[in-house]
Every structure is written in structure tokens, then in C-alpha cells.
Length: 221
Image (tube, rainbow, N blue to C red; front, side, top):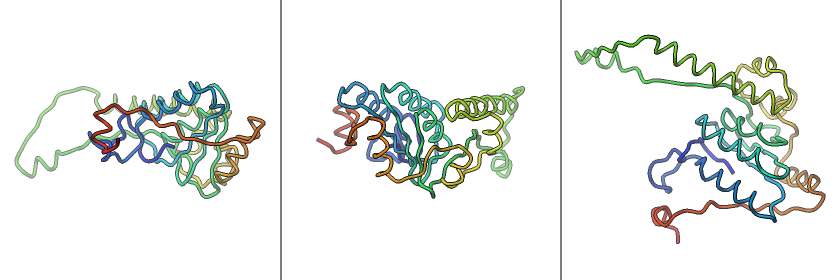
């Protein structure tokens, strides 16, 4: 399960108990542990995330794509931006009819404190050429990469992907646009996994191993 904003460390500070998002390293560990287990024949990635950082999202996508067996992504309330980046690495993508799906776009931001400093009679001078252009160029390159990932993963024309204009769609409209394969709840997804495997299936969660320091900090034993 990928819950909350995606980052390399979960985005919640130094202690696991303060984490407020999905730690990509932990998710990758879970997927790799499942892949190493001979009893795990398929992978179900449950997504409820507004997105997050690009590289951690891609780390999870790569791990899912490398899994040796059928892979199905399933959106709960929200699967946007980095979450969608992950979903296109799976063989199939399911959503509820009222899930919020999409946001195929890239955002970068900087804090501008010029007015704050000016009001306090503080001046700051920095001389650099092309900063804004460089940042915009990086964002554009990442967006092109995102479009290419979605086009390949969803078998869509890149221009069709661009026409989504980074909007978020309800599940049923996302299905009409080819952004998801099927609509259904968890039971329907598990039934589909059974069909893919040709047998009844049982879904289990693989927990990443934590070191002693992390377990003590989290209050676990």
C-alpha cells in the first residue's frame, strides 16, 4: 500500500512515528521481498496518494515493473501525479468509479522572499544567468519523460496524454480516456488476480525489515 505523499524517507522527519507519507525505500523493500518469496505469484499495489517526488516514485515503478509475475495497481480515493507514475509500471490499473485519477504533470517551486526582505530594509544581490530558464527546462524534460512513461505503459498516443492537461479525473471518466483498465472494488481486483493466476488467491502484506534503531524509535519490539 502506498499511502500519502511519496518521498525517499516518507516525508515526516527523522522518526518513523512522525512520518506522514509513503517511504519509497520501504515500498521497494516490500516489493523485492515479495519477488524473492516463491509463494508470492502476483503483486497488488494499492495506491492512495496525491503524488510526490519524481525519483522515489520512479524507484517504486521500476520495482513493480521488475516483479516476476502479474502486477495490478488499484486506486482508492486518489492516485495522482507520482502515484499515477507508479501505476503505469503495472500490467493492469484498476480504480473505483469515484477515485480521483491523473494529474500527469510536473511541478517545481521556489520560495521568493524578496518582498519580505525589502520591507525590512534588507537587500540581497545574486548574479546568475538563466536560473529560471534552467528550472523550467528541467521541469519540461521531466514532463516529457512522464508523458512517455504513460504513453508506453497505457499504450496511448503521447498527444492524447498531453491533452489531459495534468487534470484529475473521476475513475469512470479516466476509464473512458484509457487512463485505467477497469473499475472495481478490492474484491473485484482480488477476483481478477485469481483469474490471472488460475487459482484462488490470498493477499498478504510484506513488511520491510527495520534496523534496531528504527524499531526503538518507533516504539516497536
